[in-house]
Amino acid sequence: MKKKTDLKPKCLDEQEIPYKLREIMKSRDELKNSKSKKKKRKAKEKRPDVSEDDIPVPKFKRRKGETEWSYIMRMEQETQHVMFLAKNQQQREPEKEEPIQEKSQKRKEFQRKKQEKARKQKEEKKIAKLEKEFLKDPVEFGEVALQPPVLTVKPRKSVVKDKAGQRQLLLTSLLSSGKTASTQKASLARQRIVLEERERVVQAYRDMKKQKQHRSAQAQLSLDKLKKPV
Image (cartoon, rainbow, N blue to C red; front, side, top):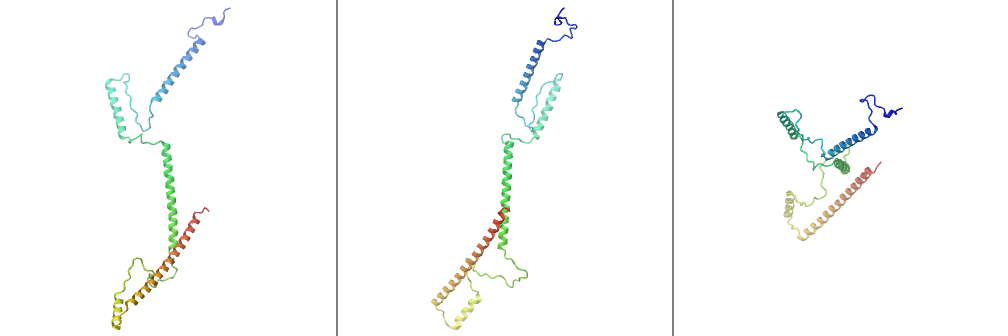
């Protein structure tokens, strides 16, 4: 009795492929696939990074069955299209472009500085408002000013000038009495008046300085209270 493995096939078209031959074919297919994958990978590595805004450069190749005239017209149309896109594209300078991460960092830094500046301006406005409130002279209800304010302190670099009527009156009284004021007495009296006026001005300046210091201390105290977290 013959073995089944040695029997002739019933139909030559339906004959099974031997195991070894199948393995050879399989390894050959795998080799082809690996080569094609390597080629694709190399082509991808060689291809430069193309941005979304970049215009792809057309590659011209005459198609099968395409006449020479049709090929030339197609190249002309594609060239005109690329030129139109390049003309209307925004001017790009890749060497000046910054990475996205660096841009985001700069944007964050800009926002932080902007917020800090706004906070300082807000604090300065609060301080100015407080100082204005403390320096303001409140007027009580029903208070009426009967006369304009009088300066009690002589302004700086001011020259005291007598009125013409007063000078004339003084001259008339001196001439009518027939007496002449002594130069020595006049100088002593003038010195006394100057000293008294100086003392009055110094005292007024000291009083103003004390009031200003008191108001500044109150303003600083109120500012410290505002800055303390609740």
